[in-house]
Amino acid sequence: MPGRRHLPDLRVGDGLDFWRVIAMELPHRLLLLAEMKTPGDALLEFLIAPDGPGKVELKMISRFLPRGLAGILYWYALLPTHRWIFEGMLRAVAAKTGMPVVSGPEKASMTAALECRL
Image (cartoon, rainbow, N blue to C red):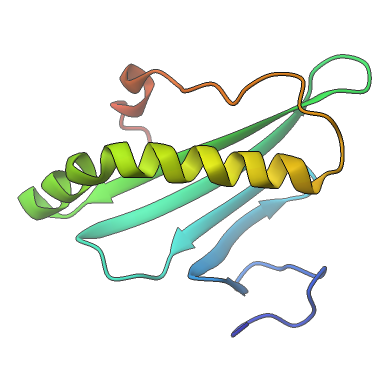
């Protein structure tokens, strides 16, 4: 893949499919920026936190920073499709660990998604 040095050696600046790694705090956080043509910037963040003995919680957070009305319409038009894609992606990531999935994935509330924090 373009931008990748070595498969298990992922670093800030590396390309990962059509994403660019923009932040990492191993082993707890990975932040990706989409490198596709969209009317805005798409971010995908993975967070891992301890959740009891021998368990972790994996969160995948999708953010879209629209550019103008076209960006807003784009996000809401694709929202049902994105939910399906992201749920499948989260299940696939969890399956790659080789460990059983205890629960989930659970859909987050949309009210949290409407916040604007910088």
